[in-house]
Amino acid sequence: MIIDTDIYGSADDAGALAIANAMQDNGQVNILGVMVNYPSKWGAPAVSAINTYYGHGGIPVGSIKPAADDVSSPDYAKYLAQNFPTQIADGNSAPEAVALYRKLLAGATDHSVVIVAIGLETNLANLMNSPADAYSSLPGTQLIAQKVKSLTMMGGEFPASNATDGPEYNWKADASAATQVVNTWPTSVPAEFEGYEVGAAVSTGAGLAGTPATNPVRAAYERMIGAGNSMNSWDPIAMYDAGIGHNGLFADNPDPGSVLVAADGGDKWDTTAVKPQHYLVASASASQIGTALESLMDQLPVQPPPADPIVAHYDQLGGAGSFLGKPAGNEYVPTSGGKAQDYEHGSIYWTQASGAHEVHGDILAKYRQYGGPASVLGYPTTDETGAPDGVGRYNHFTGTGGASIYWTPTTGAHAIYGAIRAKWVALGSERSPLGYPVTDETGTPDGKGRYNHFSRADGGSIYWTATTGAQAIYGAIRAKWASMGWERSVLGYPTTDETGTPDGTGRYNHFTGTGGASIYWTPTTGAQAIYGAIRARWASMGWERSFLGYPTSSEYGIPGGRRNDFQHGWISWNASNGATTVGRW
Image (cartoon, rainbow, N blue to C red; front, side, top):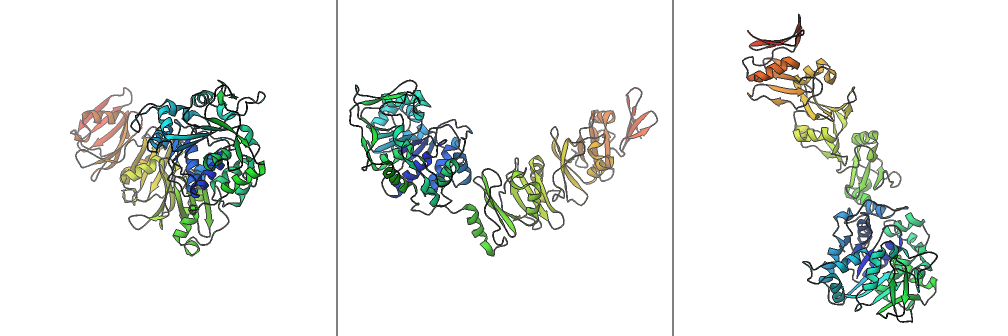
């Protein structure tokens, strides 16, 4: 069986997949694959979540491409994708539907595959139009004729679409595809059609409330219609009939003919063109049909469903006997797509992408201070872990660009993230010249920059602005910059990390100051600031490789101007005409 579903707006697609998985457990069908024909990226992971619950997560799922970030209202597909274990994170990462169709059909025995179409006919039209490829030398329609045993399709209304309500949704939504598939379907492949009127008369879904809360099908129905309620059974009926047959519940319409779809998706039963086609009519009461469907929809998986990921991680850590202690309250949803559980001495957070991870102690306190998962930090991607130097502890988080909270007994817990964290990691994290963060990321007084300070004994920082990026400054150069007023000084923000000079003797940082600004340091000269016209003259002479050598003073005032002294001379600047003069000692 290959299933083609528009899982998105109506939860009966989820009910149909429940029936298919139950029939798989019962040995009544062999599901080769599931195709998603609605262009939402949440369809394929929602299908995978349902299959995974039943222990059938290995069933391949194809997706129509491209798949957009569409959700229905009320939404259930995105909710399943983000809140239940799934093998697929995004429909765009799933195989392309037609390519998967061709692969599965090519590998099947001739005339063995039943296709169940419970949505738009887009994928089937594309399959019919597909050319020969690496999987089969046959074009699409010929491949269908050779490999497909029968088609069961939920679509249309019989004996004709209702003039008042207009065409049925599955055929109206992509009328050109429905017209092609239904009107030109290979006549060697029998087709059974379930019209709107059959599914509308039967209600199912209430029994799902008695299944485990880990059942994504239950969640789909409850999000759409509320717990313990039922809804129409269009797709479940098509799935049941394709897998089990009429079984005394249905019959074929008695008059020979075929279905004819108009350009707008409207349809009628055409008795002038006889094909191996029928449409379903009910031969049992709605309650009898509903009972048969519900028994499969509510059937529990033969394989135990995956454990709740938070519970599984809690048990892995040692449960109530672990450092976390006993649960405090119930699981809750801190943000869409995530779950959390608090304990006596910590919390476990989970998303499908990040997995389940614990946070506790001072790091948890800092995390909560920031706002937890809804903050710039996001969800944890690690448990609390010891740093390689044996001194500190940390949790990493999903925040954009990377985020962490680091703790040591002397520094406490501090958050570092984004570009500043990336710079720190590039320098060697806590093993870098900077050490551990001693502040959270903090905004500068001028509102333009951000910074973290670090535990280096003589001071260390990383400063960031949108124009300079993140730059590290520390030691004597940082002390000189701080003494001048940090970023509010004439120097501005650093535009480089502290860097060694070409001669191997000195160190420097450049800054944003008007006309250029720097602080240069050597063991003999100390850290000296140089900027503007004097710096430009020194640079034109070759910097420290000129005869002047390194600056031995910062720029200072003289009558009529400014001056820097150097190891072997000086440069002065005339305030009246802007001229610079170089002198030797």
